[in-house]
Structure formats: structure tokens, C-alpha cells
Image 1: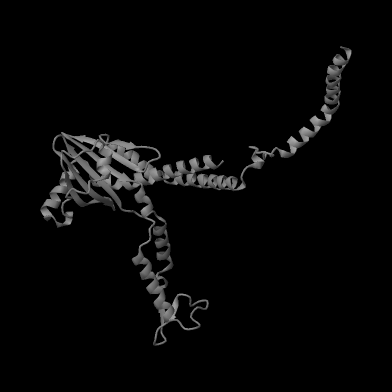
Image 2 (image 1 turned 90 degrees about the horizontal axis):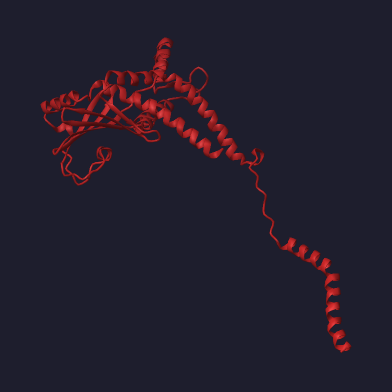
Length: 308
């Protein structure tokens, strides 16, 4: 009986002794293996000195641009004043201008009609597109001068002069302008130049459809390009969408200049009576100038906020 009890007790005792003795070494070995096998995760920090240098540089550069644009906005007070004066003089126009969007709508009622005028600040950027004809003409002019120059024609004092075939010097056009006139021309070049703006006018009558006019506002006046008639059953739930886009399947009518001259004059008077006047043609470029500056500043701030 004792031997059986001893036989059962000895293995348990030996097991306890072995486990107790080996536990610290085993635990230490296991921790070491886990430490070696566990992948190390890179430590990320949001502290300023650990941020992306490129993002910091971009944010700083944009901040500088914002300061420049703010100072230039103060110099554009003239355009802003013109817009405010127009609104005071024409309170019947309601202006729909959503921040962050490039489309602008002037809306009003006229008798039983609803008048909507649409334009976009996208035309502001189009003024910077260079004309190929101008570039070509300049290239031809300078090319002719270079062909006529002798080997010594580019020395100091003869930069703008070249030799003709008869050895007589020809003078560049700018050299024939007096210094005073040059200053006046330089001042004119510094002034903002007028740019053409595409303007759409929608005249709606209940149960009669609409007339849509495509105009160009330039130099303080409107030029009618096309007059379209939109049927009353034309499916469109959004007036703004209707004035921006015309279904391709519709007959748009002939070019306006092909109409009888008397008809053209009456159409212009028709638009003038509805507030599409020279005054509106003058203020639209100013409105674009003001809005484009605001949108550009907003865009710069949003980009800066994103990269910071």
C-alpha cells in the first residue's frame, strides 16, 4: 500500500520540482523568442518636426501667395464698387452666386416672364490664351529683321536695327516712338484689358416654352450670336441646367447675323427692355473679376488647410 502511494507521489513531486526549477528559464527563453519574432511597428509622430517637408514647403508657399492675393484684392476695389453700384441701381435683379462654384445667375421677373442671365468665371482664364495669329506675326517680324542683320548688327547700340539689302539701316517699330509715348503705352499695357464673356439669357413664359439667347459681352456692349426657341414640353426640372445646356436634337435656328437687319435691331430692343442692357454688359466683366479673386483665395486656403 505504501509502495503504491509512494509510486503515485514520486512522479507528482518530481514533476513539481522540475516545473518549478525550469519555469524561470523557460519563461525567459519564451519571451526572448517572442521579442525576436514579433515585427517592430514604425513609430509615427504628429509633432511638427516630423511632418513631411514637402507639405510644409507647399503650405508656406501657398501662404505667401495668399498674402499677395489679399494685397492685390485691395487694389481691385474699383470692380467691387461697380458691382455694388449696379446692384443699388438695379434692385430687381436677384443674384445667385454659390461660393466654390464658377457659374453666376442674374434673375428677375418681367411682366409674365422669368428672365435668367447666366455667365461663368471660366471666361476670366480664357483671356490669357495667346492668339496663334499674334505669335506668328511677331515671329515673322523678328525673323525678317534677323535675316537683314549683318554680323555686327547685334552689337550694343544696334540691337533693334538691321541692314537692308541696300546696306541702309532699318529701324524697329518701337524705336520710332518717342520716350513720352512709350511711357503712355506702358501705362496702357499695365491696365487690365477687357475680355469677352459668353452670356446666356433665358426668357420663359408659362405654357409657352422659352427663348434662349447666346450673347457675347465685350467692350461694354452685347453682341447677339444666336436666338433659340425651346418648346414648352421640353423636360427640364432645373432652370439653371436648361440655360447652361441645350438638347442637341433641337434645331437652334440660323446664326443671328443671317437674320434681317431690322429683325436684329428689334431683338436687341426686346432684350434691352428686359434689362439686358449696356450697363449689364459693363458690370459682368467686373463681377467676374471680383468673384474669380474670391474663389481663387478660397481655393488657396482649402489647399493650404489640406496639406498643413
